[in-house]
Amino acid sequence: MPQYRRFTADDAIQFANQHSELFGEHSKLTAVSFGDNHMNQVFRVKNQFNTSLIVKQALPFARGLSDRWPLTLDRSRLEAQALLNFSKAAPLRVVEVLHYDPELAAILMEDLDHLVLLSSALNEGRQYQKLGVQVAEFVANSSFANSDFALDLSAKKSRQIQFLNPEPLQISEDLLLNDPFSNNERNQIDASLYPLAQHLWLDEQLQAKVAALAASFRSKPQTLLHGDLTSRSIFVTADDLKVIDAEFSGFGPIGLDAGLFVGSLMLHYCLTPALQPDVIKARDQQNYLHNQIKLFWQQFQQQFLENCRQQCRDPLFGNELYQKQFVADILHDLTGFAGCELIRQIIGTFKAPALATIQSPAVRLQVCQHALTLGQRLILQHQQANTIDQLLSWLPTGSAQ
Ligand code: ADP
Ligand code: MG
Image 1 (cartoon, helix red, strand yellow):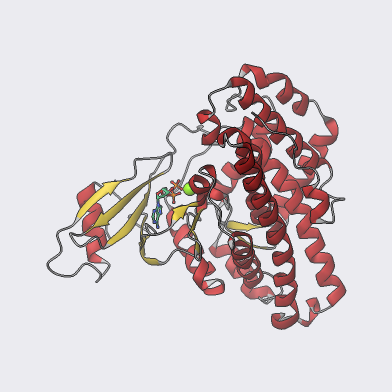
Image 2 (tube, protein in one colour):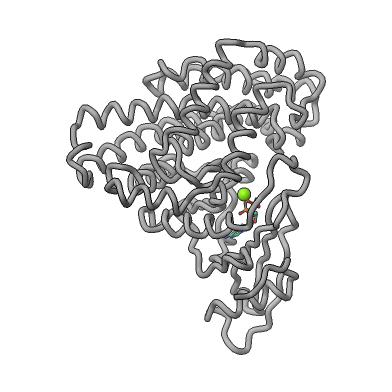
């Protein structure tokens, strides 16, 4: 077994060439790094004919992150195995993993260079009509396949052991449910936002609802989650959509993945008037996001219940009334986690990068106010919200110009 070493560009080339037939004998290979981020390094390995693959290697430390978060390299295995697991249930919606090496903590995967990262595309005002439906297909099918509806008790418990991932889950919990709701030193807040943030930290009702969501995160192992299903983990084209970056996977409530996706689209909704100077185009983009959130909600609900009707393996969970209640509970969690996602993108450690591109401090403050108010409302009402129209009626009106 090879021992872990931090890959150079040459190591990435060798790793890609060794584990794929794609390049062939006469290939001249080069590797370009995407730049190190906090926890991994990612290389694009390419030959002279522009055939390319991606190598992602986990780093043994989290750069710039707290000492509270030691990281094992095992998360690379978990990421590869989670992507392979999801691809069985939603074959078209997941990046293809070609090889992974647990010792080197490295994954070789298909290059999605013919698609674009959803977060960048939405910031540029682009629209993908199949977005909501395709993400709903991914969440409904992958979450169903790892749930008690599809696995018997023994298979589910084995899978929970296979995907034990306490360290990344601790980071998720801290970043999503802990830090933004307390005056934590890791938060990065503009002085102008401080009074609003303080308002959240002192709101007892809100804190109680966040505690309920944290309990759901910890003690509701309904399925194998992606764990970070925001617009930064999704690649798209007009027809295609693929999910990447599953290193935060682990068992938890289905509403988490669904809620992170919805919260992420709602954040784009709040950002749109600040990023798009043309008022009519901004309104059109907001209508688009509004519709995609609605389509996601409806399609998820429909697809999950359809899976229950057609593929439920355990008679214990065959009762239709129970299945409907189960989905209603997912939608409550979804609502609450969407609220947390909005708030963490405004006052957490890793704020939405698009915020920094807004020149005017007044406009930026207004976007933040909109996102925080919406997030707060979603969390406070998450156990009551039953229809998507109710949630959408809370989206901010008025432009940030
Ligand atoms: P991290 O979790 O460390 O942020 P990601 O898996 O999100 O790592 O990858 C970081 C960046 O590398 C992505 O935003 C994207 O630009 C690029 N990338 C990762 N995987 C692929 C892929 N399969 N195809 C194309 N680009 C990729
Ligand atoms: Mg990641």
